[in-house]
Image 1: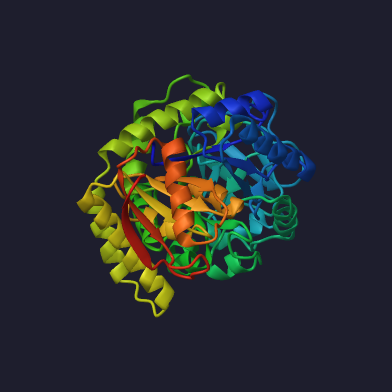
Image 2: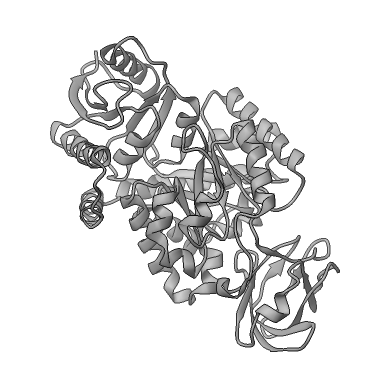
Length: 476
């Protein structure tokens, strides 16, 4: 069973029903809908197509709506894109004109006044970078530091402390309301700089509402990470934008730091940006990309994300399949003992007076240790909200986490959590009956056998607010 989850972006190359079904079969756990381009109804149609494809395949797929955010957008480049050469001069300006290889127009009116000489800029996921050499009343005069191909209407990455913009925007709230009404499982919030930004979205806590995925892509977000963790349901390490606010040499260390702090806080973490970028055009990734994906797994990430590879790439299904193969192999080599020890130390450095959280911490860590000591085949979690499952997941047990919840949205939200296989199961009259049904399901759907030993973790009553019961049982 592959433990690390795969988030795949749905776009023109992958939004037809047949391709969606093949991507699910290849290993897509969460489908991401990027809302920065296109009309709301078009995005909602993608949402409905994904739900239908998952039903046709007969599996649970989470859906992540990635809100547009207050990013600076470039005017469209010519069809087929342009290739920027290292050292070439480029002019940036504010306006609605088309962009070209010599002049890049943006939708941010304050661009020239906010950006200073010496600032770095980047397009898209950081494929093309520039340095501003001079400016006048209407233009920024820049030079290409690292060139590549650019197409469509990419975002322009500007040092975050320069921009006079806030999140969430009015458009973010409008899109979020529409997708929450449709039943979306997760929403990603761009340009987060503090816990206040996350709370300003104003959604109900999961599973009544969606998991809010805070995108860590600014220096301010890194500096306010602890507060953001407390306010969020999950986190995305958006390496492209971080590469503008920080030197490129800092990114690997930031990635490790963010992942460890978030997992210790019980949040799933998505590692994103250019994971298998060459597969936008190529049938195989580079060796460096394969190593990057594996190292993200070793860093402890819950999920890895495909962007252009599946949205506009030549073979979205192959991109998902390749990602699944790389992560499954890396999962085998994961250092479970060292990771559990690190998380235990990090948790000890985060004191809390919430008795329910303390109890769940202790019980879930104990469940992982007991599973090791008794040679369990799986950890079976009964969880109404998914909180118990995410708590177990952060300790990265060697055995699968089989999760059962009466809430279907909670089940789909667990598609983002490392090592978990989740199923919807209604509450029965007693906890004992609910456990018996879960064990029977584990035999039918997850390959457990009669006599296999399992660790069952739950609340002593179905309405319990904390995980407080561990049982070692045999599958009947």
